[in-house]
Amino acid sequence: MKKILQIIIAIVTILSLPQAHAEDNMPLKLAAKITLPKVRGRIDHMAVDLKNDRLLIACAGNNTLEVVDLRAGKHLYSVAGFKKPQGVVCVSEYNKIYVTNGGNGECDILDGDSLKLINGIPLSDNADSIRYEPSGKLIYVGYGKGAIGIIDPSTDKLISRFSIDGHPESFQVESSGNRIYVNVPEAGNISVINKARGGIVDRWPLPNLKGNFSMALDEAGYRAFVGCGEAPTLVVFNTKAGEYVAKMKIDKDADDIYYDQARKRIYISCGSGFIDCFSSDGADHYTNIAKIKTPVGSRTSLFVPEQNRFYVAVPSHGKQPSEVWVYDAQ
Image 1: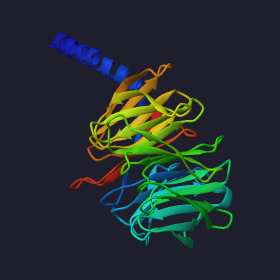
Image 2: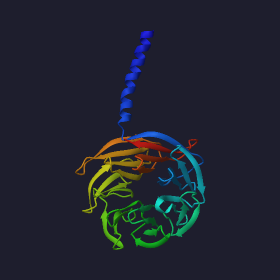
Image 3: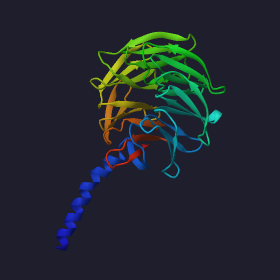
Image 4: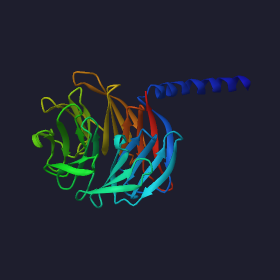
């Protein structure tokens, strides 16, 4: 009997080794799950407050901004009073947090420490994606039926706007160059804005695809990665030439894409229940190196290169509360 038990233990140990080895070799390793109590409905974009070691989560369905203590790995509190918050960005130079509201078109401005409302900027309906470009010290906001607004955080004034051909979804702003790349699903293209000239200088059509909602940028490598929802596909554009150079099948309902410059990888959070991970092999060859299972509906994510961490927002389902899953890039 003792010998049989030893054999069983040995078999179980051997069978468990490949799984452990595979987990160690995954591009993203699950490090923690943080519960977001009383958060219901759609979770939109996230931002990290590196100064205070906090994760800020715009919960559109809950009309709250959720605050997570990353050092302690736990939920701190909720900030209420928003109208369908969709985007959030931290501007540490000015100690401010900016939150876009899809419900009333406002960009709310919060104190960076207390998260109390200190100001607001009226834009128009459906204030959505927001980016801070530190080299120019300007904030860019997509909103309305076709606009990218520019906010000066030193004055909290809307100083300019660019008109585009439809509501902007995800967009990316060059740090060392003058261009903004904007997903415009209604027009079926990527609109290229020249910041210095003040308008659209090019429009890149999609290769017989629709639903271009997500985007990431490899500025140094002159590549833009665009996620298309119809016939789910990742399209890679050469930003110098203004044409697509590769496309790969991805999982359904891709909402956020990030490029990991240090590891030459692409991470895509898909609402169908996967994180698709691709490696860039050079010469526009991309390999799908992993499909990491997540709960269905987990479409919102954030990659923070300063922390080597990838955050995925998991919405509530039945009695299962909302969570943030924290992955270490390895």
